[in-house]
Length: 556
Image 1 (cartoon, rainbow, N blue to C red):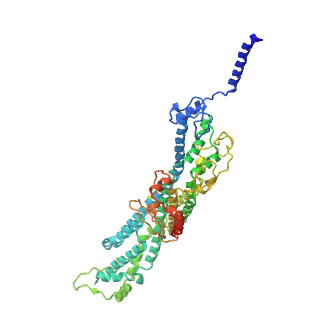
Image 2: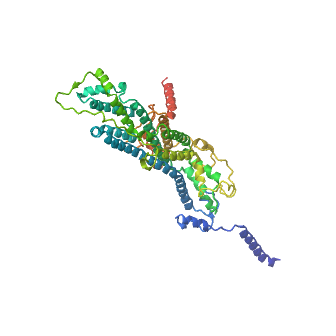
Image 3: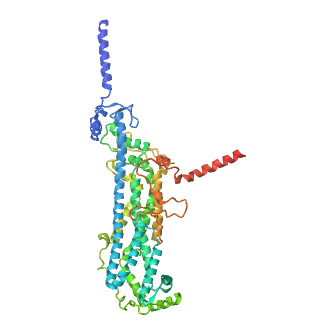
């Protein structure tokens, strides 16, 4: 037995070694992971050919892995870019819708004013000839003021129209009483009788109401489209937090580290991560929906009683009717003015005065019938424009609360909602078991995938919430036919200048709302660079009170 002892021992050890080697798992190939990694433009030397120990991983699961430390770091950067890109794609379409509709409305309103002015000029030249040419600057000033209101908003429409009719009365009064000499002081007295005598009939009152309502509604609506465009543009620039980035790389690329390159994230898993990463955007939804509803209300007014097209197209006919009314009642009007302002001085004997024949103002304009009315500005009509925009507005409602779902519906981001068992759940290829959290910052306290600081709302988002709230208030005023206070912002394109619309002294100006940057800085960076934001003052007040009480106790 002794002579067989040593060979037997060797055989036993060899058998045990073979068994141990057989028990160890074979090192899996990482060729497909490596191929996909290189296809993204990364260095192939970062990617191992076979699985390695994953103790170096900080985000993805440790253990045997196909990811090096360099790969995890680069996947982290890539996941941020992928996230930004897909959010931007979702928002860019909506931004383009509002930008194109704003441009169309802006072109339409401006061209409508140009057409109305040209129509009046052409008709008045044919009807009144030289007399109109001598006084054409009065009508030119009227349209210049209307354009200035639309572009800048810093025109009081009611006062401007009252001034137009007073100046027209002065000119007309001179013409129908050309045998007299009138001083500037006398004509100023004449203008004071405009409201009392109603020399132009009821046209000034009706036209003032129609023009004010139509222009306020038109400008406010165009401005609303511009505000919506700008809000979407600013909010679409996302800068994920560190916690969000960790969740993104875990969802999008950690499956690669386990060799599961074809397995997509579970839909509910993706939903939780997007709701955490887009928590602040979700808080826009309430004010956004209120804003959309207000826009739809004003759109209804533009289709009905506040239709600027139906006001401006026949404005030449309406002003002509007013002139006819003055001509027909010139004797009675003149007698009442002479009684109130005193008898005028006749022109010196021998001086030739130009008289106005009875037929000078006898021609009346024939308004267009509906079938004859030409297509006005920008090759379209207001009704067609409003119908199109109303449809787009309805589609845009609840955009921010549905954004996480829209992102996860992208096949690049997640598996379909019907594929719940064969998807990546953050740890392996299996069903995702957690419930989906609600939208908005307040609902993220229990988000199982993303740690969100619910006590620090994003300053940029707060500014856009305020901008929407202010614009909604303006929309409601315009809907009710009330004039809207606009704050003219120089160097802004037409229709974009906007004001606070706030009566409270504490309400910040709208210029501040729109002054958010696109740099992608975090809320903390912005707050520190801009001092204490206005939104923080309500939280600081209790602190001041506590300090005051402490100091009083010390004095005692």
